[in-house]
Length: 226
Image 1 (cartoon, rainbow, N blue to C red):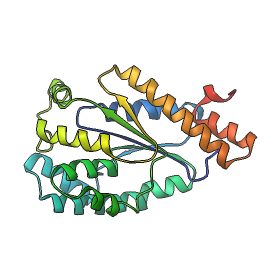
Image 2 (image 1 turned 120 degrees about the vertical axis):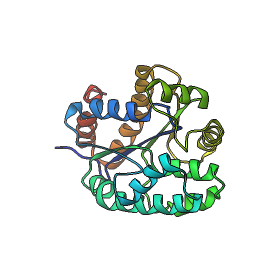
Image 3 (image 1 turned 45 degrees about the vertical axis):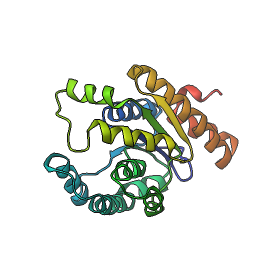
């Protein structure tokens, strides 16, 4: 990428299961990469050893909340060290399908202290934009079944409702709550608007005017003339 932002640009897509996170992350990657920006799309838990143990537990039966939290932190430390941190240092864009807010919501719903969970994630880079896809558990579960999947151990109405409450109450900078009951196109447009405002502000705060415009246009070409 010819024009980069100091510290890169980190987008986290969050929400309960069935909210459309993976769909939005893929659509954002396609749109933001249109101008030649380097886009890294990744998700948590990862496919690393700790992340895979968590993924397997979703089908075989949940671990204790303490073990889940421990594995998630180990997985996230590797993720930050190997992918997220280096990409941001190069001035690239990273799009995360789930990040530490999911741990706070899901393990918080399982009984762990939310403040302790936030503290345990202090090492994780904070998102420039946190897109929270808000959806009722009933609709989320309907979507999961409609795509041919069977809800796993994390996907019960009670668990998802508790997670939704925590997500909405979570005090995280740059959080934008999007109505995930709307069409995928409507959600994408709302997400792009939130990203546009934050990207423009960051570029203009961290770069000289000409470089700021170039950096913005690399991710959002249609904004080049603004």
